[in-house]
Image (tube, rainbow, N blue to C red; front, side):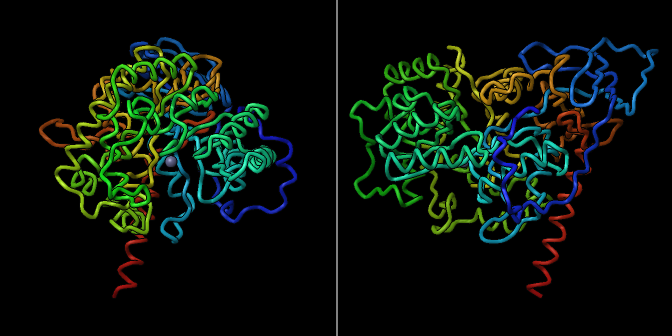
Length: 493
Ligand SMILES: [Zn+2]
């Protein structure tokens, strides 16, 4: 098993409510052959092929140059002529949600959007469903009992005292958490937490927001990944304090998200350079989640994305609309000046992510979908597009989304298309090196034989050798959305 689930889990008595899931639609074959595919292996190597890929059970058995006269003994053959095969996408920041805004979502809605976009692994940095449910789902997914990516469940942890945090960490280990997502203000609690996590062998992902500790401090404490970007410019502000207007309150989300855009400008480039060097030297992964803030630089774009109509549940869209009572729904007085400040901020931020990678740092793809007009699956692909905008070649972007993610998670046989490795791979209509947009569930337009046609999209998502028809999963999602809209219409009639 790839992610051994601690024995203690076997004694979990109650099955959490969200575990009542429809059965998996995926099938694992003794012998599966993907024929005539162009292959992007996920290491940054150029595309090669056409190849024939043989998968036995959950492993890639062999990869050979395609020959049209070769016949295979196989339980299933996928003809990938004109298609590209690449490793399955690893989304390092995927909050699984079964409820939004107090309302239930169809249980498999988020999972199907992910698999439908070729996402074979998610690290869940804390789900509203709780760690017990996510650990349970991780097992069900591993056994192909539910339609879901491989789940790496991290638990959010917080406490007021060092003693309390140690006890919490030990409790989470017992419950099967595979990592910790930390937002922790007090340095003494942080120190105890990091020490206990090290003893227990649990990696830490941190979303620093605003804390006494900055990126340099937590790098010293040995965190595995820094999420978003908070704490990095903070470590390079000469005065040491954020210079915001006197009326600013961190707990006013409009203030908080508006002025956050100024932090990269306030950071001193020489100091930033040293912060980046420390992160690289200590092997910290940077998971920037560019796309979740994109509404801040172009709100109109974010609110009118073409996939909302068929793929966004009405309650998900309602959750995104401005309302000070909800997290991430702060766009009630969002001005031209705010958008400009954010665009400038992105330029500096992207420059430093590029620089971090140039110096050897591990950059990954994480979406943080489910907030701020950022839809599951689509948001992960958008994140990849923004990595390209940050100056990365599409081959590097795919590396971020595959082998770099595997490295950050310690998955040694995932994220690369190579004999002996896990059969986590996707079959895509088109060439993502030409246009990453071919990965979107809505595909791309092409002009063929005098007509405008829709092409693209992931055709098959293969997780651990389990084949999912990605287009069928997306059709299921469209049906969920259609029905939910009917219900809303009935209720208002
Ligand atoms: Zn998050």
